[in-house]
Structures are given as structure tokens and as C-alpha cells.
Amino acid sequence: MKTIFPLLALCLVFLSGCAITSTSTAKVQELAKPYVGIMTLVTDIDTDFNQLDSATYEQHIRGKFNNLENLKYRKHLEKTLARNLEQQQQVQTRIVKSSDVFELNANVSYSEFLEKIRATGVDGILLVNLRNYWYTNDYTTVHFDHVSTTTTDTEPSAVFYTYLLDSQTLHPVWFADSMVQGISAGYDTLHNHLARSISRKLRKDKYIMAKY
Image 1: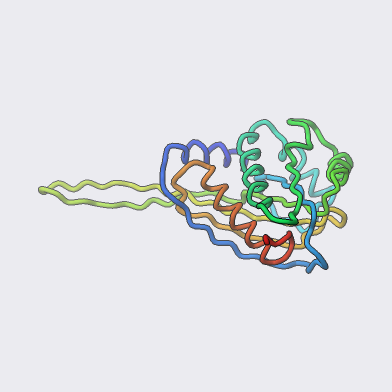
Image 2: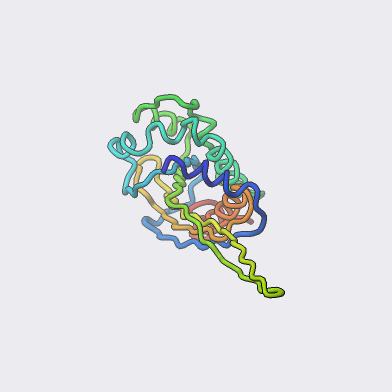
């Protein structure tokens, strides 16, 4: 999974077009009131989990959420998520980007990881994981003057798993499975479609403040 983000950028940056996003959600635990503070965390790990315990962190998260390799793409997605989650409203959920809290390429222990998150005062962690990425080829053949010409339209697609975790229990309270298809612009298009979908679903399900 380490090469997904770089491949995404190389293959999408020179194309143009639009994307279609579908998101299904699951309410794992109902909240008495929406979260007032959320930290965004972006990963591309090849696993599912039911809690952010020390074993999960050490095996799948440590060194992968703040590494050098995927810096550009993580920061862009976090910025896009924050922009969509912090829409203009009278009362809004505060968004803290993990890239503003954790030092780049630092070897962060599990205890330090939790300490830094809880020191921000957030009550939720929005972990967005790029789970899969693939291409679909669409072939078009044109016949003219006894000559056939075939062109190939390559459409990349991606699947994201998004977990909203309680910062105290570290268990998911909400989950989203998002597929973005037919991406034909830069990775910014992928991120924008995903962030808008996640933001709408979280507000609709009342896990963050609804826009007035």
C-alpha cells in the first residue's frame, strides 16, 4: 500500500474531467451530542480495525501517518477535510489537523500519540484510510475510410474507509465506506469529492455540528 499515493498523483495530475462518489455509513454508537473537536488523521494501511489500541498502532499506524513519503497527499487531504468540515456556521466543530500536531517523520510512541491528541482537547479522531486504488480501461473504436482507430480512456477509482473514533475510548462510533469513480483530474478532485461526501454524512448523522 506504500505506493498508492504517489501512483495516484502521477496518473491523475495530467488528466481532466469529473468524479462520482458513493458513500455508505454505519452508526456504531449514537452520540448524546455532536463532537465539538475532531482531529483528522490520514493513512493508507491495508487493514481494518475495531479500536485504536497499542497493538494496532504499533503494527499499522506508527511511522505511517507522519512519514516523508506521503506528506504532500496527506496534507492536501487534511486541508480539504478541514475546509469542508469547518463550513461557515454559528456553531461549528473545531478541526485539528494531525500534520499541525505531530512532527514530520518523528518516531512517535503510542503513549505520546495519545497524549498529544488529548492535549488538543478534541473528543473525536477522524481516521481516513485509502484502502484500495485501481484502473478501469474503456476502449472506443472509430471506423473511418476503412481504417479503425481504437482509443483507451483510463479511469482510476479509489476506496476510502473512514472511521470516527472517540478520543477517550478509541473505539469507532461511526464508519463510512466511500468509493470515488471516474477520477479524471488531479488528486485534489479525488480529495474534494471524498471530503464533501464525508462532511455531509457526518452532519446528517449528527456526529458533527449541523450547518445553520
